[in-house]
Length: 388
Image (cartoon, rainbow, N blue to C red; front, top):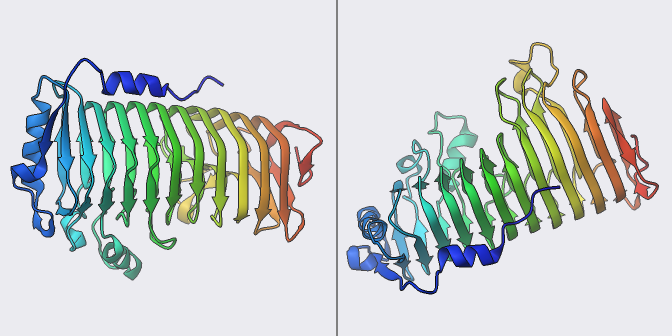
């Protein structure tokens, strides 16, 4: 494994150099109102412009209160590092259509050395979910916070509740630390993934609680060197690599580690999911270690037969090559008898899959395992008995 969390000391040096004094910009000084009713988008942008143009390190301060923001874009590059310090709550418009056609509610684009510390984001997504469930024509919905093409990012102690879509998106980024974050939405809220990472490298997610209506963490194409530890997942759809392989010319996923984490009453545990269609993509060098499953529906699953409505999958075989995946020290309870389920591609079988020290129970008895088109190895300490 080559993926390790980049040093916290590195973060401290990069973001808080001791020789420079930071300038602080309070959004209230620019006209923001903490009443939850007055739109404060323009004052936030004015505070950002001042911080972005500062030659010295700077901070933007959001005090206690509720600040109403419409869709907003914080654009870089900036002259120096910026820290968003949030003590209050940032709220979205009560009418979901106010955000519904935005790419994101709060977007950071092409920034470097930005940290977001503390605070709560409340996207008030319930009315949007109701629209989606009704079958009516609805906007596409907006993720709550997105970082596009950003480097050296820290997100710490942030709470996101009731997002319309994904809570936090990391797209096209390098060197990102996400720590002590909470993402919370009802288990029936559609597409409210906790954290989505794609086309990014050297990302660490640690000490976070993810309780959503979709994946706790979803990992998209082009993700390299992602390290996750001390996560609490559930309810939700588990932690998923994929879905991958929707496009033929798609970047692969490699060097992914998940350790020391707990899943509780989630629909899946650790999942790799690919479209059943041709693709140049791949998944390799994956480690799942020291994981607890508490009443999880599908604790360990590889599904290479994903094809919604059976459309666009002419041969129903995935081109994604999955290899060098290790599952070790995984224990707990499954709500389904088949706790380990490998459904790999006929044309590209899974290779070098390893099972070590697995103990999963179903109704106080050993669960079952199922393997299709998979090659690998297993040690003797396995429950259920290995199908490899």
